[in-house]
Amino acid sequence: AARDFALAGRRTRDDTMKITGFELGKLRIPLKMPFKTAIRTVDHMEDVVIVLETDTGHKGFGSAPATAVITGETHGSIIEAIRTIILPAIKNEDIQNLNHVVDLIQGSLYKNFSAKAAVEIAVYDLFAQSLGAPLYKILGGGEPVLSTDLTISIDYIDKMVQDAVDAADRGFEALKIKVGKDMRVDIERVKAIYAAVSDRALIRLDANQGWTPKQTVTALRELENSGVEIEFIEQPVRGNDVAGMKYVTERVTTSVMADESSFGPREVIDLIQMRGADIINIKLMKTGGISNAIKIADIAALYDVECMMGCMLETAIGVSAAAHVAVAKANSITRVDLDAPSLATVNPVVGGVAFDGAEISISDAPGLGIEAISELSMLNFDKAAAS
Ligand code: MG
Image 1 (cartoon, protein in one colour):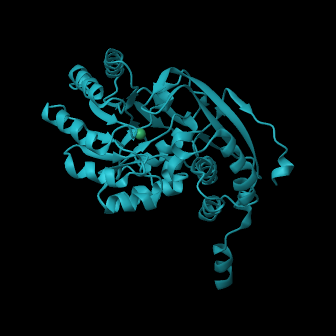
Image 2 (cartoon, helix red, strand yellow):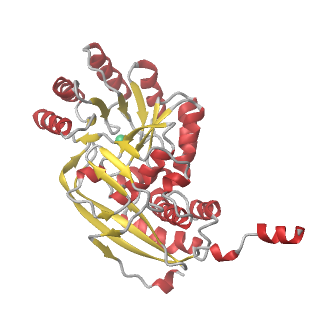
Image 3 (cartoon, rainbow, N blue to C red):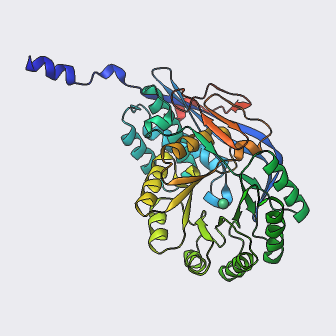
């Protein structure tokens, strides 16, 4: 009887799901209106898409945009990193050994966080599919509905006020105002928008590294003194100026959020310990994927620091993965800035996560729940060369 018990407890090997190959594609979607920040203007979003193939016929989806000014990656570098280094490192591995596969991805090359994120997203999609549950449940569960803010691009004051009013009319209860160009004009921008919509929407600012530490303190004190209540100021100073972030955080009442100053868990620990930020903006394309995003959410929770889940200008594949993580880690991820699908003219991703204005809701389909992706143009590579 003891022997039978031992046999029954031994895991059979017919429940494996091995990675057999991959396909890469590109997804290019025009925006409803140009996206303007202190450092760039773009009129479309374009992702590299990975379709991870397995011996069970399941397919996992992942994606990454090229945000060269932030992560240093281009579509070319993402494609090369995935096909020549990351995928060969995990080929023939069993998806059920999730932690091992994640270690292989993270250890395969230095940096290249967006390339790693695209592959990790596909791996987590498959892992959850192999267990027959939506990803957020595999990550610990939660209420599968989120409310996102909407970004208001930097522009002439009248245009920004109109965009803010339109967004409030569409039901967005938090607006992220892009500033960081000319500080004096920025203050006027914020005052005008605040006067127009503050009774209906929370106002967040993102300066995208556009101000100096002293300018930031001046601007925020003026706003604070004139009765303009800002929920937080995101990345006012250069990302690598952590001392500048600390300088600002010490001197203003408004909460300071780190975006470009915070990539992986180590930067988050350093920032929190030196009090260089009050809130952390987590983006899968900065952390290298889901595993480090989870670590950051847990580290922040330990320190009673709150996080926001953000995204790049990217399609609903990667943003869906971010939504699953935000739901599962809602104890520390208290804010959601996953508006990229709302900025696009169409959502090419069918199934899984619904992006309906401010509301994001996740279905109970296994994994990310992606059924199809339209507009996807596959890239032709000699698969044998990468194996
Ligand atoms: Mg930002």
